Each structure stands twice: as C-alpha cells, then as structure tokens.
Image 1 (cartoon, rainbow, N blue to C red):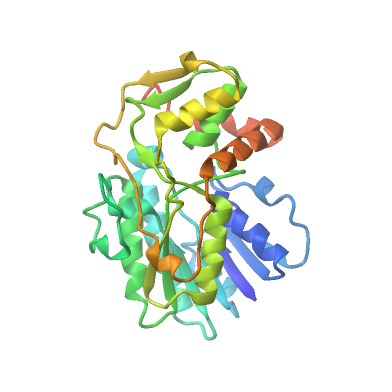
Image 2 (cartoon, helix red, strand yellow; image 1 turned 90 degrees about the vertical axis):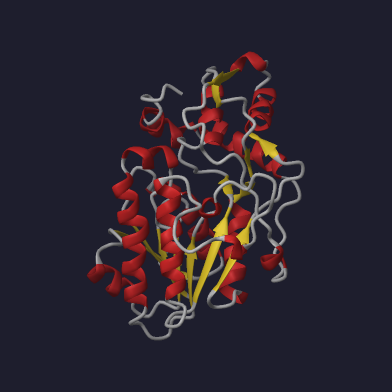
Length: 332
C-alpha cells in the first residue's frame, strides 16, 4: 500500500515506518524535524519505498500534494511532552489541533483513502484513580485533560471523529510507550542514561504514580490491526495492562538493580506537579476483540530497551543536553 505517515521521524512514528518498509509498503514520511524528530531514527532505511519530506503538517498546499493517491494516512505528528507544554502551550495547540485540522481537510478532498488512523493518547481521559477507562468514557471537549498537551490532543480527537461521516477515521489511544529511539526527556531513557553516566535518577514525590508501560512494537502491531480491521468512526484503546501495575518507583528500582547500584541512586524530589494525573489505566476489550494481545510482561522488554541505550550512546549523546534542559527550571 501507499501510506502517508506524519511524524515518521519521531519515536513511535519511526517504529511504524521501519516496520511498514519491512512489510513492503511504500511510505511518504513527512516530519518537521523539531527537537524530537531525528533522521537517525530512520538510519536503517535505505530504499526506494521510503520518501522523506521535511515539512510542517499545518502547510495545506504541501500536505495536499503529499496526500495524493495515498491509501492510508497514519497521523503521529504531535508535540508530546507535558513539561514542555507548560511553558509553550501555543505550540501544542498549533501542531496537535490545527495540524490535525489541516490533514483532515486535505484528506476529505481525496479519493481512494481506505483509512485515516489518528494517533491519540490515554491522557485525554485524565487520571484513572481506581478504574480502567473505556473508549466511551472520554467526554467531548478537554475537561478531563490536565495539561496543554493532553487538552490539545483531546480536542484533536473530537475534531477527527467529527470527520467520520466524510472520512474512514479510526482513533487509537495508546498508553505510555517505551522502546529504542525514544527522546531522552522521557522517564525511561532519561533515567537509563543518567545511570549509564553514574548519576542519580530523580523520582517525583514518593514514586507512587502509575503508568501503563507499553512496548512500542506492540503499539505498531495494534495500529496495523486497526488499518486492517478497525471500524470507521470508532476509538480503540491500546495498552499493556501491566500486572502487577508499574509505579514510577518500581521502574526506578528495576533500572537501579540492572546497573547493580543501590537505592541511594534514586533521589526522591518534591513533585513539581502535585495535581498531575496519578494513574493511567485503559480497558482494551474492544481492540482485544479484533485479535490484539500485548506482550505478556513489559519488564523484560524494559531491560532490553535499557540495553539498547547502553549499546547506542552514539544516538543519544547529542540529545542529552537539550533533553535535560527542560528540567532545569523545576530542578528535577
């Protein structure tokens, strides 16, 4: 198939592109190459099936041209870090909402489009406290979301679904992805790199916050399934449903033990966002009925990911300074 991928030089997007090329598809990959877009994520790709275009998804004329004859659109492109969204919220609304609007507008004028997969996030539901959110639990608007990032993504969800009468829209809401090539502002690569460097890792509060750690290759398998079997106009949660759940302190201890350090390498720091979402958890029965099964245990995959960072310092060394810079003001 001919697939248009937005944000295909980012973490999840590049994983999708690499697999799509391996599967024999033709990919047009458009990425603005902001700080988290990285051509080195695509270094292993070198064939005529992949066309890479540096462009802003808000540029309607470019997107219209790139979308010609596309059979599938997979829309990953987004500003995606909560801490950055606190200082530059306008950038998040511009890319995540207005960029999505441009893509939908252009797609609605195309013939032959089989699926438009809009990649969202579990953060649109807000904190799960003691439940698992189902797809219908998201309210219209952004009232459940707690950051400029998640609010912009929540509004983009609504916008995408409003086009379901004109486009073959499917919305995917994955949980906290991890794996190789993840920009080192995120917890797992940031902590791993700090431990490689012999530094302490900062854990906010008591480390009790819960995230659902989903291996990126599982996410890509789920997206492939939605391209093949996802029902138009529907939303699908994608999650690992870790059992037992993984608190931030559990992840930190797993990493410290891998490096054979003691607990002194975990630095508990005051939570700079005490009202931030405490727990994310999704019900995945809907995509499960399509045949999706995540990996049985994320923990060995987390260790495999740590080993990738240990072995690939060439990739992350140029990125660390910027990634650490966003935490300077909050001193964590």
